Image 1 (cartoon, rainbow, N blue to C red):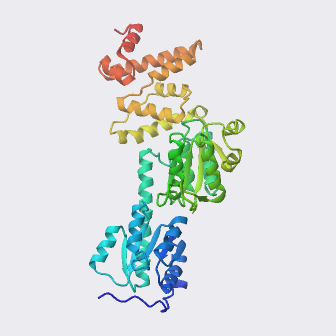
Image 2 (image 1 turned 30 degrees about the vertical axis):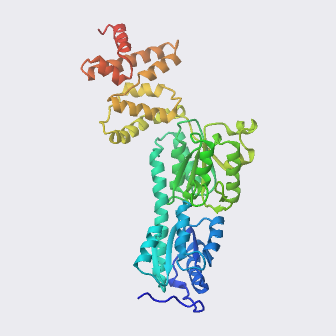
Image 3 (image 1 turned 90 degrees about the vertical axis):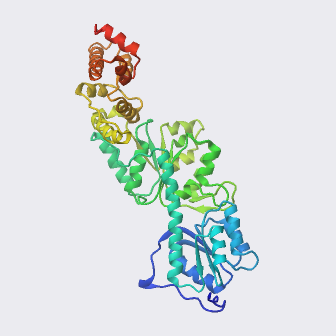
Length: 461
Protein backbone atom coordinates (compact mmCIF):
# COMPACT_ATOMS: atom_id res chain seq x y z
CA UNK A 1 0.00 0.00 0.00
CA UNK A 2 1.62 3.30 -1.03
CA UNK A 3 2.28 5.74 1.76
CA UNK A 4 0.47 9.10 1.67
CA UNK A 5 2.31 12.27 0.73
CA UNK A 6 3.52 14.59 3.43
CA UNK A 7 1.11 17.47 4.10
CA UNK A 8 2.11 20.81 2.52
CA UNK A 9 2.32 22.41 5.96
CA UNK A 10 4.46 19.59 7.37
CA UNK A 11 8.08 20.76 7.84
CA UNK A 12 10.57 19.04 5.58
CA UNK A 13 13.60 17.32 7.10
CA UNK A 14 16.68 19.49 7.02
CA UNK A 15 19.64 18.34 4.95
CA UNK A 16 22.62 17.17 6.98
CA UNK A 17 25.20 19.68 8.12
CA UNK A 18 28.74 19.60 9.48
CA UNK A 19 30.48 16.23 9.29
CA UNK A 20 27.39 14.58 7.75
CA UNK A 21 27.19 16.99 4.81
CA UNK A 22 28.50 15.72 1.48
CA UNK A 23 30.95 17.84 -0.55
CA UNK A 24 29.82 19.57 -3.74
CA UNK A 25 29.96 16.46 -5.89
CA UNK A 26 28.58 18.05 -9.06
CA UNK A 27 29.78 21.68 -9.20
CA UNK A 28 28.67 22.15 -12.82
CA UNK A 29 25.32 20.35 -12.63
CA UNK A 30 22.00 22.23 -12.79
CA UNK A 31 18.87 20.64 -11.25
CA UNK A 32 15.21 21.66 -11.54
CA UNK A 33 12.73 20.56 -8.85
CA UNK A 34 9.06 20.53 -9.93
CA UNK A 35 6.62 19.91 -7.08
CA UNK A 36 3.45 21.67 -5.94
CA UNK A 37 4.23 21.12 -2.23
CA UNK A 38 6.19 24.10 -0.80
CA UNK A 39 7.74 21.97 1.95
CA UNK A 40 9.04 19.39 -0.52
CA UNK A 41 10.44 22.07 -2.83
CA UNK A 42 12.21 23.71 0.10
CA UNK A 43 13.64 20.40 1.30
CA UNK A 44 14.96 19.38 -2.13
CA UNK A 45 16.31 22.83 -2.89
CA UNK A 46 18.21 22.94 0.43
CA UNK A 47 19.47 19.41 -0.10
CA UNK A 48 20.77 20.01 -3.64
CA UNK A 49 22.02 23.58 -3.36
CA UNK A 50 25.18 22.55 -1.55
CA UNK A 51 25.90 19.59 -3.77
CA UNK A 52 25.25 20.94 -7.27
CA UNK A 53 26.06 24.10 -9.12
CA UNK A 54 22.44 25.25 -9.41
CA UNK A 55 19.08 24.15 -7.97
CA UNK A 56 15.87 25.90 -9.09
CA UNK A 57 12.25 25.13 -8.23
CA UNK A 58 8.86 25.28 -9.95
CA UNK A 59 5.38 24.66 -8.52
CA UNK A 60 3.78 23.44 -11.76
CA UNK A 61 4.59 22.01 -15.17
CA UNK A 62 3.74 25.34 -16.78
CA UNK A 63 6.17 27.19 -14.49
CA UNK A 64 8.79 24.53 -15.18
CA UNK A 65 8.41 25.07 -18.94
CA UNK A 66 9.32 28.73 -18.50
CA UNK A 67 12.48 27.80 -16.58
CA UNK A 68 13.37 25.09 -19.11
CA UNK A 69 13.13 27.67 -21.88
CA UNK A 70 15.58 29.97 -20.11
CA UNK A 71 18.03 27.53 -18.51
CA UNK A 72 19.77 24.27 -19.25
CA UNK A 73 19.29 21.46 -16.69
CA UNK A 74 21.14 18.20 -16.28
CA UNK A 75 18.41 16.74 -14.07
CA UNK A 76 14.71 17.37 -13.43
CA UNK A 77 13.12 15.98 -10.26
CA UNK A 78 9.49 15.90 -11.30
CA UNK A 79 6.35 15.18 -9.30
CA UNK A 80 3.77 13.16 -11.25
CA UNK A 81 0.69 14.76 -9.66
CA UNK A 82 0.73 18.46 -10.47
CA UNK A 83 -2.04 21.03 -10.88
CA UNK A 84 -2.79 21.32 -14.60
CA UNK A 85 -0.39 19.34 -16.77
CA UNK A 86 0.90 16.17 -15.12
CA UNK A 87 4.54 15.32 -14.64
CA UNK A 88 4.38 12.44 -17.13
CA UNK A 89 2.86 14.75 -19.75
CA UNK A 90 5.69 17.24 -19.23
CA UNK A 91 8.24 14.43 -19.50
CA UNK A 92 6.70 13.20 -22.76
CA UNK A 93 6.86 16.73 -24.19
CA UNK A 94 10.51 17.09 -23.20
CA UNK A 95 11.41 13.87 -24.97
CA UNK A 96 9.41 14.88 -28.05
CA UNK A 97 11.40 18.15 -28.16
CA UNK A 98 14.67 16.22 -28.07
CA UNK A 99 15.52 17.24 -24.52
CA UNK A 100 17.52 14.32 -23.15
CA UNK A 101 18.13 15.57 -19.61
CA UNK A 102 17.80 13.04 -16.82
CA UNK A 103 14.37 12.94 -15.11
CA UNK A 104 13.58 11.41 -11.70
CA UNK A 105 9.84 11.10 -11.12
CA UNK A 106 8.41 11.30 -7.60
CA UNK A 107 4.89 10.56 -6.39
CA UNK A 108 2.87 9.80 -3.26
CA UNK A 109 0.62 7.21 -4.86
CA UNK A 110 1.79 4.79 -7.48
CA UNK A 111 1.06 1.36 -8.81
CA UNK A 112 2.89 -0.87 -11.25
CA UNK A 113 1.08 0.60 -14.26
CA UNK A 114 2.17 4.14 -13.29
CA UNK A 115 5.78 3.06 -12.87
CA UNK A 116 5.78 1.35 -16.27
CA UNK A 117 4.26 4.42 -17.90
CA UNK A 118 6.92 6.63 -16.28
CA UNK A 119 9.79 4.48 -17.50
CA UNK A 120 8.32 4.27 -21.01
CA UNK A 121 8.06 8.06 -21.07
CA UNK A 122 11.80 8.26 -20.47
CA UNK A 123 12.25 8.62 -16.70
CA UNK A 124 15.60 7.47 -15.37
CA UNK A 125 14.34 6.73 -11.84
CA UNK A 126 11.17 6.61 -9.77
CA UNK A 127 10.83 7.56 -6.08
CA UNK A 128 7.83 7.04 -3.79
CA UNK A 129 7.05 9.69 -1.16
CA UNK A 130 7.92 9.99 1.62
CA UNK A 131 11.51 9.09 0.78
CA UNK A 132 14.62 9.20 2.93
CA UNK A 133 17.42 11.64 2.29
CA UNK A 134 19.74 8.83 1.25
CA UNK A 135 17.20 7.67 -1.34
CA UNK A 136 16.95 11.02 -3.08
CA UNK A 137 20.70 11.58 -2.92
CA UNK A 138 21.28 8.13 -4.41
CA UNK A 139 18.82 8.82 -7.24
CA UNK A 140 20.43 12.20 -7.96
CA UNK A 141 23.92 10.69 -7.88
CA UNK A 142 22.99 7.91 -10.31
CA UNK A 143 21.15 10.27 -12.66
CA UNK A 144 24.02 12.76 -12.83
CA UNK A 145 26.52 9.94 -13.29
CA UNK A 146 24.48 8.71 -16.26
CA UNK A 147 24.40 12.23 -17.71
CA UNK A 148 28.17 12.56 -17.32
CA UNK A 149 28.76 9.11 -18.78
CA UNK A 150 26.63 9.98 -21.78
CA UNK A 151 28.69 13.13 -22.40
CA UNK A 152 31.97 11.25 -21.93
CA UNK A 153 30.87 8.53 -24.35
CA UNK A 154 29.96 11.15 -26.92
CA UNK A 155 33.31 12.89 -26.53
CA UNK A 156 35.12 9.54 -26.73
CA UNK A 157 33.32 8.51 -29.91
CA UNK A 158 34.08 11.91 -31.41
CA UNK A 159 37.74 11.68 -30.39
CA UNK A 160 38.10 8.16 -31.80
CA UNK A 161 36.51 9.20 -35.09
CA UNK A 162 39.10 11.98 -35.33
CA UNK A 163 42.00 9.70 -34.29
CA UNK A 164 42.94 11.79 -31.28
CA UNK A 165 46.67 11.30 -30.60
CA UNK A 166 48.08 10.27 -27.20
CA UNK A 167 49.05 13.04 -24.80
CA UNK A 168 52.65 11.85 -24.33
CA UNK A 169 53.73 11.91 -27.98
CA UNK A 170 55.89 15.08 -27.84
CA UNK A 171 58.95 12.98 -28.60
CA UNK A 172 62.54 14.23 -28.62
CA UNK A 173 65.38 15.53 -26.49
CA UNK A 174 66.48 18.46 -28.63
CA UNK A 175 66.77 21.92 -27.11
CA UNK A 176 63.67 22.99 -29.06
CA UNK A 177 61.47 20.17 -27.76
CA UNK A 178 62.77 20.42 -24.21
CA UNK A 179 61.95 24.13 -24.27
CA UNK A 180 58.47 23.41 -25.63
CA UNK A 181 57.77 20.85 -22.91
CA UNK A 182 58.96 23.26 -20.21
CA UNK A 183 56.75 26.06 -21.56
CA UNK A 184 53.70 23.79 -21.70
CA UNK A 185 54.30 22.62 -18.14
CA UNK A 186 54.48 26.20 -16.86
CA UNK A 187 51.34 27.31 -18.69
CA UNK A 188 49.37 24.17 -17.77
CA UNK A 189 49.37 25.14 -14.11
CA UNK A 190 47.28 28.26 -14.78
CA UNK A 191 43.84 28.52 -16.36
CA UNK A 192 44.65 31.14 -18.99
CA UNK A 193 43.57 30.92 -22.63
CA UNK A 194 46.44 29.69 -24.81
CA UNK A 195 47.18 30.24 -28.50
CA UNK A 196 49.38 27.60 -30.12
CA UNK A 197 51.01 28.71 -33.36
CA UNK A 198 53.19 26.86 -35.80
CA UNK A 199 53.29 25.26 -39.21
CA UNK A 200 50.88 22.51 -40.14
CA UNK A 201 51.98 19.13 -38.81
CA UNK A 202 54.13 20.42 -35.94
CA UNK A 203 51.96 18.79 -33.25
CA UNK A 204 49.73 21.57 -31.99
CA UNK A 205 47.03 19.11 -30.91
CA UNK A 206 49.62 17.12 -28.97
CA UNK A 207 50.64 20.33 -27.21
CA UNK A 208 47.00 21.09 -26.40
CA UNK A 209 46.60 17.60 -24.93
CA UNK A 210 49.72 18.09 -22.84
CA UNK A 211 48.29 21.35 -21.48
CA UNK A 212 45.03 19.60 -20.62
CA UNK A 213 46.53 16.54 -18.92
CA UNK A 214 49.05 18.53 -16.88
CA UNK A 215 46.58 21.19 -15.73
CA UNK A 216 43.65 21.54 -13.33
CA UNK A 217 41.17 20.23 -15.94
CA UNK A 218 42.95 16.88 -16.38
CA UNK A 219 40.08 14.77 -15.06
CA UNK A 220 37.47 16.33 -17.36
CA UNK A 221 36.83 16.15 -21.10
CA UNK A 222 39.20 17.27 -23.85
CA UNK A 223 37.03 18.25 -26.83
CA UNK A 224 38.74 19.05 -30.14
CA UNK A 225 36.98 21.20 -32.77
CA UNK A 226 38.18 21.25 -36.40
CA UNK A 227 37.31 24.81 -37.44
CA UNK A 228 38.61 24.36 -40.99
CA UNK A 229 36.68 21.21 -41.92
CA UNK A 230 33.17 22.04 -40.72
CA UNK A 231 30.69 24.34 -42.45
CA UNK A 232 29.97 27.60 -40.56
CA UNK A 233 26.29 26.74 -39.96
CA UNK A 234 27.12 23.27 -38.65
CA UNK A 235 30.02 24.57 -36.57
CA UNK A 236 27.80 27.16 -34.87
CA UNK A 237 25.32 24.45 -33.81
CA UNK A 238 28.16 22.13 -32.76
CA UNK A 239 29.83 24.77 -30.62
CA UNK A 240 26.84 26.42 -28.95
CA UNK A 241 24.05 23.84 -29.23
CA UNK A 242 20.72 24.14 -30.97
CA UNK A 243 17.32 24.62 -29.39
CA UNK A 244 16.20 22.97 -26.14
CA UNK A 245 18.05 19.87 -25.05
CA UNK A 246 20.65 19.86 -27.83
CA UNK A 247 23.87 20.72 -26.07
CA UNK A 248 26.90 22.08 -27.88
CA UNK A 249 30.58 21.32 -27.51
CA UNK A 250 31.04 24.06 -24.91
CA UNK A 251 28.63 22.18 -22.63
CA UNK A 252 30.19 18.78 -23.40
CA UNK A 253 33.57 20.26 -22.45
CA UNK A 254 32.19 21.63 -19.15
CA UNK A 255 34.98 21.67 -16.58
CA UNK A 256 37.51 20.59 -19.23
CA UNK A 257 39.30 21.90 -22.30
CA UNK A 258 37.89 23.00 -25.65
CA UNK A 259 40.55 22.87 -28.37
CA UNK A 260 39.84 25.11 -31.37
CA UNK A 261 42.09 23.83 -34.15
CA UNK A 262 42.80 26.30 -36.99
CA UNK A 263 40.83 29.04 -35.26
CA UNK A 264 41.85 31.46 -38.02
CA UNK A 265 39.38 29.71 -40.33
CA UNK A 266 36.36 30.86 -38.29
CA UNK A 267 34.12 33.27 -40.23
CA UNK A 268 33.65 36.73 -38.71
CA UNK A 269 30.12 36.09 -37.29
CA UNK A 270 31.39 33.03 -35.40
CA UNK A 271 34.40 35.01 -34.22
CA UNK A 272 31.99 37.52 -32.65
CA UNK A 273 30.02 34.72 -30.96
CA UNK A 274 33.23 33.14 -29.63
CA UNK A 275 34.35 36.51 -28.28
CA UNK A 276 31.10 36.85 -26.32
CA UNK A 277 31.63 33.44 -24.75
CA UNK A 278 35.19 34.30 -23.75
CA UNK A 279 34.00 37.56 -22.18
CA UNK A 280 30.78 36.38 -20.50
CA UNK A 281 31.55 32.67 -19.91
CA UNK A 282 28.01 31.90 -21.10
CA UNK A 283 26.78 30.30 -24.33
CA UNK A 284 23.45 30.79 -26.06
CA UNK A 285 22.24 27.83 -28.19
CA UNK A 286 21.21 28.64 -31.75
CA UNK A 287 17.54 29.59 -31.88
CA UNK A 288 17.25 29.91 -28.11
CA UNK A 289 17.02 32.81 -25.67
CA UNK A 290 18.49 30.88 -22.73
CA UNK A 291 22.11 31.26 -21.74
CA UNK A 292 24.18 28.47 -20.22
CA UNK A 293 27.12 29.25 -17.89
CA UNK A 294 30.27 27.39 -18.91
CA UNK A 295 33.55 26.67 -17.15
CA UNK A 296 35.89 25.70 -19.98
CA UNK A 297 39.53 26.31 -20.74
CA UNK A 298 40.09 27.48 -24.32
CA UNK A 299 43.17 26.37 -26.21
CA UNK A 300 43.29 27.63 -29.82
CA UNK A 301 45.72 26.74 -32.60
CA UNK A 302 46.64 28.31 -35.91
CA UNK A 303 49.14 27.72 -38.71
CA UNK A 304 48.52 31.24 -40.02
CA UNK A 305 49.91 34.59 -38.92
CA UNK A 306 46.78 35.89 -37.20
CA UNK A 307 48.33 39.32 -36.79
CA UNK A 308 48.38 39.58 -40.61
CA UNK A 309 44.75 38.44 -40.75
CA UNK A 310 43.88 41.15 -38.23
CA UNK A 311 45.57 43.76 -40.39
CA UNK A 312 43.69 42.49 -43.45
CA UNK A 313 40.34 42.54 -41.62
CA UNK A 314 39.90 38.76 -41.75
CA UNK A 315 40.23 38.24 -37.99
CA UNK A 316 38.86 40.35 -35.15
CA UNK A 317 41.52 42.24 -33.24
CA UNK A 318 39.64 41.95 -29.93
CA UNK A 319 39.30 38.18 -30.33
CA UNK A 320 42.98 37.88 -31.25
CA UNK A 321 44.00 39.59 -28.01
CA UNK A 322 41.55 37.42 -26.03
CA UNK A 323 43.11 34.27 -27.46
CA UNK A 324 46.70 35.47 -27.22
CA UNK A 325 46.83 35.67 -23.43
CA UNK A 326 49.68 33.17 -23.70
CA UNK A 327 51.16 32.25 -27.09
CA UNK A 328 53.41 29.24 -27.61
CA UNK A 329 55.07 28.63 -30.98
CA UNK A 330 55.86 25.05 -31.98
CA UNK A 331 59.14 24.52 -33.90
CA UNK A 332 59.14 22.97 -37.40
CA UNK A 333 60.84 19.60 -37.73
CA UNK A 334 63.69 21.09 -39.80
CA UNK A 335 64.64 23.06 -36.66
CA UNK A 336 65.15 19.90 -34.57
CA UNK A 337 66.24 17.20 -37.00
CA UNK A 338 68.25 15.53 -34.25
CA UNK A 339 64.89 14.21 -32.95
CA UNK A 340 64.16 12.28 -36.17
CA UNK A 341 65.68 8.93 -34.98
CA UNK A 342 63.61 9.07 -31.77
CA UNK A 343 60.47 10.03 -33.72
CA UNK A 344 60.96 7.19 -36.22
CA UNK A 345 61.45 4.67 -33.41
CA UNK A 346 58.35 6.02 -31.64
CA UNK A 347 56.17 5.79 -34.74
CA UNK A 348 57.35 2.27 -35.55
CA UNK A 349 56.68 1.12 -31.97
CA UNK A 350 53.19 2.63 -31.83
CA UNK A 351 51.96 2.09 -35.39
CA UNK A 352 53.16 -1.47 -36.05
CA UNK A 353 50.89 -3.09 -33.39
CA UNK A 354 47.96 -0.93 -34.48
CA UNK A 355 48.41 -1.95 -38.14
CA UNK A 356 49.10 -5.58 -37.21
CA UNK A 357 52.42 -5.68 -39.07
CA UNK A 358 56.01 -6.42 -38.14
CA UNK A 359 58.34 -3.51 -37.27
CA UNK A 360 60.83 -2.45 -39.94
CA UNK A 361 64.57 -1.89 -39.63
CA UNK A 362 66.00 1.49 -40.58
CA UNK A 363 69.67 1.50 -41.57
CA UNK A 364 72.16 4.20 -40.64
CA UNK A 365 72.31 5.33 -44.27
CA UNK A 366 68.53 5.60 -44.43
CA UNK A 367 68.42 7.55 -41.17
CA UNK A 368 71.07 9.98 -42.47
CA UNK A 369 68.94 10.38 -45.57
CA UNK A 370 65.89 11.25 -43.47
CA UNK A 371 67.94 13.84 -41.60
CA UNK A 372 68.90 15.58 -44.87
CA UNK A 373 65.28 16.13 -45.90
CA UNK A 374 63.59 19.39 -44.78
CA UNK A 375 60.13 17.90 -44.04
CA UNK A 376 57.76 20.65 -45.24
CA UNK A 377 54.91 18.62 -43.72
CA UNK A 378 56.80 18.40 -40.42
CA UNK A 379 56.25 15.57 -37.92
CA UNK A 380 52.96 14.58 -39.57
CA UNK A 381 54.77 13.94 -42.87
CA UNK A 382 57.37 11.79 -41.09
CA UNK A 383 54.63 9.82 -39.34
CA UNK A 384 52.82 9.20 -42.63
CA UNK A 385 56.06 8.00 -44.23
CA UNK A 386 56.63 5.53 -41.40
CA UNK A 387 53.05 4.27 -41.66
CA UNK A 388 53.34 3.71 -45.43
CA UNK A 389 56.67 2.00 -44.92
CA UNK A 390 55.24 -0.37 -42.30
CA UNK A 391 52.48 -1.35 -44.70
CA UNK A 392 54.89 -2.23 -47.54
CA UNK A 393 57.48 -3.72 -45.17
CA UNK A 394 60.46 -1.42 -45.80
CA UNK A 395 61.34 2.25 -45.43
CA UNK A 396 59.88 4.02 -48.46
CA UNK A 397 62.10 7.04 -49.15
CA UNK A 398 62.18 7.14 -52.95
CA UNK A 399 59.64 9.95 -53.18
CA UNK A 400 61.65 11.92 -50.62
CA UNK A 401 64.80 11.30 -52.65
CA UNK A 402 63.20 12.79 -55.75
CA UNK A 403 62.11 15.87 -53.81
CA UNK A 404 65.43 16.22 -52.01
CA UNK A 405 67.41 15.61 -55.22
CA UNK A 406 65.62 18.53 -56.88
CA UNK A 407 66.37 20.77 -53.91
CA UNK A 408 70.14 20.14 -54.12
CA UNK A 409 70.59 20.22 -57.91
CA UNK A 410 74.08 21.44 -58.64
CA UNK A 411 75.15 20.97 -55.03
CA UNK A 412 78.16 18.81 -55.92
CA UNK A 413 78.96 16.15 -53.33
CA UNK A 414 75.53 16.40 -51.68
CA UNK A 415 73.80 15.32 -54.89
CA UNK A 416 76.23 12.42 -55.30
CA UNK A 417 75.61 11.30 -51.72
CA UNK A 418 71.87 11.34 -52.33
CA UNK A 419 72.22 9.25 -55.49
CA UNK A 420 74.37 6.76 -53.61
CA UNK A 421 71.81 6.54 -50.80
CA UNK A 422 68.99 5.98 -53.29
CA UNK A 423 70.94 3.24 -55.07
CA UNK A 424 71.70 1.45 -51.80
CA UNK A 425 68.10 1.69 -50.72
CA UNK A 426 66.66 0.33 -53.98
CA UNK A 427 69.19 -2.49 -54.24
CA UNK A 428 68.58 -3.48 -50.59
CA UNK A 429 64.85 -3.56 -51.23
CA UNK A 430 65.34 -5.72 -54.35
CA UNK A 431 67.50 -8.13 -52.37
CA UNK A 432 64.90 -8.35 -49.56
CA UNK A 433 62.25 -9.58 -52.04
CA UNK A 434 64.54 -11.97 -53.89
CA UNK A 435 64.89 -9.78 -56.97
CA UNK A 436 61.12 -9.51 -57.61
CA UNK A 437 60.92 -6.09 -59.28
CA UNK A 438 57.13 -5.89 -59.03
CA UNK A 439 57.23 -6.49 -55.27
CA UNK A 440 60.20 -4.14 -54.88
CA UNK A 441 58.45 -1.36 -56.81
CA UNK A 442 55.40 -1.76 -54.57
CA UNK A 443 57.52 -1.48 -51.43
CA UNK A 444 59.38 1.52 -52.82
CA UNK A 445 56.19 3.29 -53.82
CA UNK A 446 57.28 3.68 -57.48
CA UNK A 447 56.27 2.09 -60.77
CA UNK A 448 58.06 -1.00 -62.09
CA UNK A 449 59.10 1.03 -65.16
CA UNK A 450 60.86 3.59 -62.94
CA UNK A 451 62.61 0.80 -61.06
CA UNK A 452 63.77 -0.86 -64.27
CA UNK A 453 65.09 2.46 -65.57
CA UNK A 454 67.09 2.97 -62.37
CA UNK A 455 68.51 -0.56 -62.60
CA UNK A 456 69.44 -0.02 -66.24
CA UNK A 457 71.32 3.12 -65.30
CA UNK A 458 73.35 1.11 -62.82
CA UNK A 459 73.74 -1.82 -65.23
CA UNK A 460 71.77 -4.04 -62.82
CA UNK A 461 69.74 -5.94 -65.48
